[in-house]
Image 1: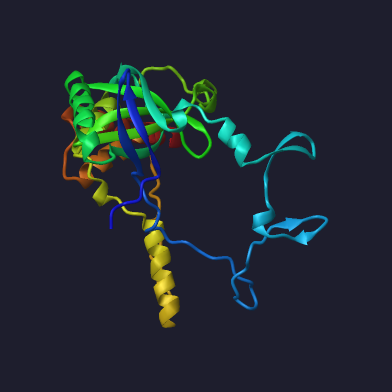
Image 2: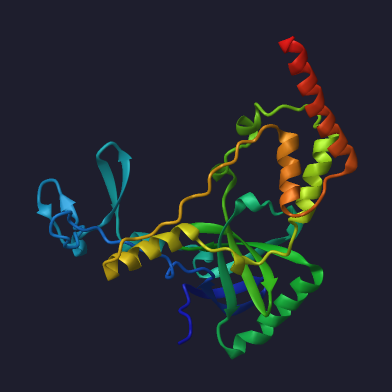
Amino acid sequence: MAPRASWKGHLKLSLVSCPVRLYNATTRSERISFNMLHKDTHNRVQMKPHDPELGEVERSDLVKGYMYEKDRYVVLNDEDFEKARIESADTINIERFVDSSSLDQIYCDSPYYLAPDGAVAEETFRVIHEAMRKKNKVALARVVLSNRERLVSISPRDKGFLILTLRTAREIRGHEEYYRDIGNGDVEKDMLDLATQLIEQKTAEFDPSEFTDRYEEALLEIIKAKISGDDPVVAKAPERGQVINLMDALKRSLDQAGQKPPAKSRARSSGSRDSGKRRKAAGQK
């Protein structure tokens, strides 16, 4: 069964356009989901709309309202939403191109796949795709999704395009207040060398298949045990080791992988411990 498009319209570059379809690039169908039950009957609780005056109401009687003052609303109907339709409601109009390196990841939001809508659209689609691939550029455009105009980036991916909805500047919090109390002092070279060696030792290609939701897996084991009537067995979280000092922690991290720290660091660390022992002994006399 072919995937269902979440949006249909046109991709437009100046006077060139072609019909396209937009598809969700992610899914949540594999996640564990829970229903709300009553604690005594274990019957599923139904969340029904409730009006303070009328009590329970039908969903067909609900309308959308915007609160412009406390407890005062202006009601919008389907005709109002239709009047607000703009070009980006059914057209992804490419406005400009930028270097991919200039797109800060903090602005990236939800991913979608963009594909041509039918064989007739393929030639135009492939021309735009190949031109963007050759220039190694990312396009910026706008599109209306879920009654909201979103700025999006468009980049070639395989034979199609990857679209990322982008957050606006007002949605991003500045980082300065969170980093304000971090000092500016230089780090010790020996410890920096050890940390660099540790990073090199743990460097590998990104493979998302290696990462799973261990919390969800533990929940699934508990669910299976409860279904079969067994007592769930849950692995305990590993105990946190006590770190004596940063230099020792870095050395031990490398030792776990069978790598030896640089000789200078070993000598310095050993000397530091010996000095500490001598100072301690002198203090006891």
